[in-house]
Structure formats: structure tokens, C-alpha cells
Length: 162
Image (cartoon, rainbow, N blue to C red):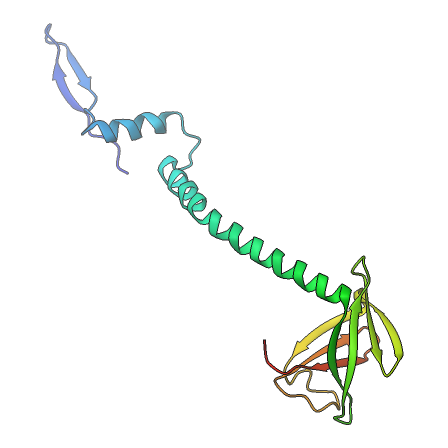
């Protein structure tokens, strides 16, 4: 903003004097008073931003709670074990049971009474649908593929995209 224009006036003894301009209204005076002690940040903008964030917080909290609820439900289901369908490289579908240990560190697969444990940190990638493109398994939009750090892939096929 431009500096205020100072107007010369005369004091009663006719000595020249300079008078500061008057505030236009009480709101301007309030802003000017606040800016005297400001550290350079906009007082009004931070107040508006804070109020906006407070208004959004309950929605974010609800969203976070919903995500936590879904994760908790998933973990409980996986602890009990879920019957799934594994897709072999030749396209054969095989029923399997997938469980997780109590510490949620290992996934256990059981196909035809053969059990295998996979440490979750060994999963490098998770793909949905027709990816990854470079594997032999015939994938479609109902597939989900785990790529392990060994390069091995495990594909599950679901009945719906959900």
C-alpha cells in the first residue's frame, strides 16, 4: 500500500505542523492497531484459515475413524481366516484360506492342505486388475496380485471389484 499523505496544518501559534491522517473507520483502526505489533504475517488471513480448518476437522476425523474401522474389521477377518480363490499361472482357480498372525506380520496361505507363510515386509508391490503386464498368469479386472521381493507373484481372483 502507498504511504499515507501527510497534510501540513498550522498550530494556534502559526507554527507549521504535520498531522497524521485519521482512520477511515473503526475497522481500519482495528487493522492498523493489530499491524503495529505484527510479525509480518497477515492477522486476518490466519484467523480465517484457522476457522476453515476447524470447520473441516470433524469431517477429516470422521473419515479417519471410518478408515480405522475398516482396517480393524479387515484385521479381524484375516485373523479368523478368509476363504479366497488363488489364480494359477495356467489359469486354474484354486480355493485357499488366507490368514494373518496376531501381530499382523505374516500372511498364511493354505491350498490343498499345503501351508505357506509369507512375511508381509516381503511384499514389494500390490496390483489390481490386469497388472503387472509381464507375468504369465491370465489376469482380468477381478484379480489382485502380490509381487514378492523374490520376483514371485501370488494372484487372487475375486467375484467383484469391491
